[in-house]
Image (tube, rainbow, N blue to C red; front, side, top):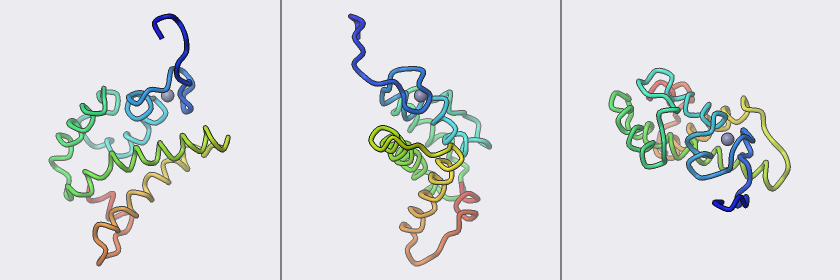
Length: 132
Ligand SMILES: [Zn+2]
């Protein structure tokens, strides 16, 4: 990269910069919309999250008032899984979902995983979002 050779692809979401782990999962303004789904009522915003390790630390801090800490802790993995699946759809199948659909995928994955944790109960999307 120092010699001006492009070693990685451009981000498949914003197309503005090289796709790195920190960009794709934390810093991208497009995938950042997923963080904002869950951070709207918290004291941090996705733009304050620099690197993955810092993001996880900030996430723990921001979730101290979450009604359900288990649900809160599963959100970063849900966001990253959703981004990774959509990224691979764009890279390998030359298809893309609208951001509205990506957000719905993220929320439904979160609900599905929360239901896996509480397998004796059926937790609705509203219950999950209300617990954060
Ligand atoms: Zn990007």
